[in-house]
Amino acid sequence: MPQVRAAATYALGALVTVAPESSADNTASEDDVDEYVQAAEQEIARYLLRVLSDGSPLVRAELATGNAYNLILQKAFV
Image 1 (tube, one colour):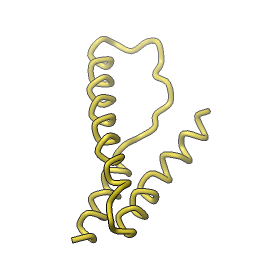
Image 2: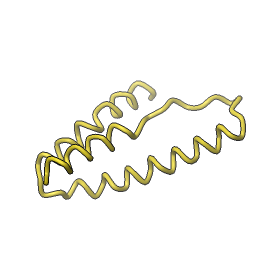
Image 3: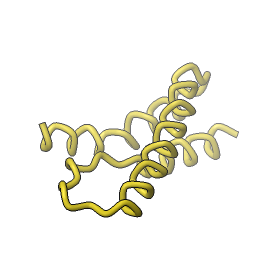
């Protein structure tokens, strides 16, 4: 069902975050968590790249909508 794929695509796109650079006073455990989160977000992004070829325009639109907030945040950090 395209509606279910669209909802999942939006949720995953909104889950991936763009964070500012971390400070230099991070502890080792925080660095490990950051690396784990980064790896998980990269895997989600790889999945979302496959969604670009989905046959449903609704799914592709939700991909753009789910990532729009992250694009705005990324622009703010640059």
